[in-house]
Image 1 (cartoon, rainbow, N blue to C red):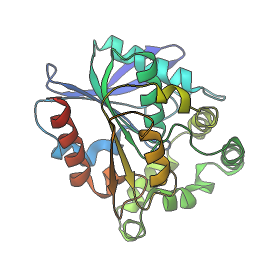
Image 2 (image 1 turned 180 degrees about the vertical axis):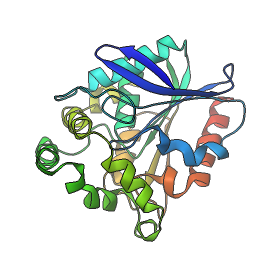
Image 3 (image 1 turned 135 degrees about the horizontal axis):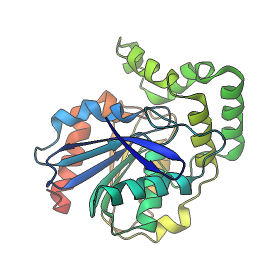
Image 4 (image 1 turned 90 degrees about the vertical axis):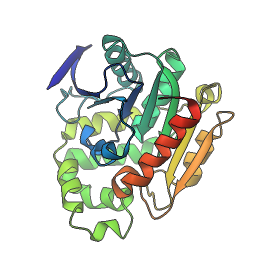
Length: 262
């Protein structure tokens, strides 16, 4: 188990694969931990350096109380990558992880040579929506929202699978304070203007059944970056890396090949 202390948190992370390989960094969604990426790992090329981590308030990372800022989330992965001596990575971010990807690329382009913005946007929802969600978690815990979250996360077909119980368990076992803190960070983030100034290879991935970040929202963000590519995954929801791991990994692999990231 690896822990890195930065600011007021301890980040749990994994650094797998070839330590001299091309680095690929994964940032997961709200309500999940770094195991989100487990399904795709067997389908990725060998020889990569795979770095995953639990953002603050999730998984085995520490969980400060109160609202978090996107700036803090970006600073923490920035510090971790500096600690690991990572430069020119491919940064794969899903949902809030995709917002972190944008923030990091805006701040430290020396760390990010290409990025995948998966099921995310420059701005997600309105503050009122996030305030309501925070209030619901404060009143009844994540359990109070779990069923509605799973409806947005997964397609109808996947929600009939026994495996759904595993992802429900992951969700409800995240700390309430972490879920609320990161919700506040999303609520306060609007990257439309700074993201439109980015110039780096970018792939957008969306799920046709995504109830959290619909395809048009993802496409709108990705198209802010000239030369970007967009991939729609049909019959997949907000977590296509879970529902269609082989296809998701192929999109990443093809993008790595196109950008020379091997």
